[in-house]
Length: 89
Image (cartoon, rainbow, N blue to C red; front, side, top):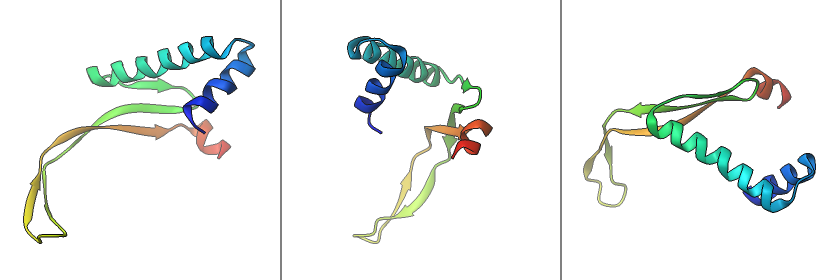
């Protein structure tokens, strides 16, 4: 499912226009993004939890040059599905 498909699904189920559904979907995604940027968790009961994980720096090998290189530490988004989502799949 693409974002366009999601907007069409929301528009059909909520009996609103695709333009209004697009604004609503963008608002939800923006809210999740802003919360994660602040370091907060976003919990949607029955669906799952979005959070930020910290990856440590690590050493790797460039497959072309075979030289060792260091990958820096960074923050990455993480999603843990809830029980309701796991059961439905």
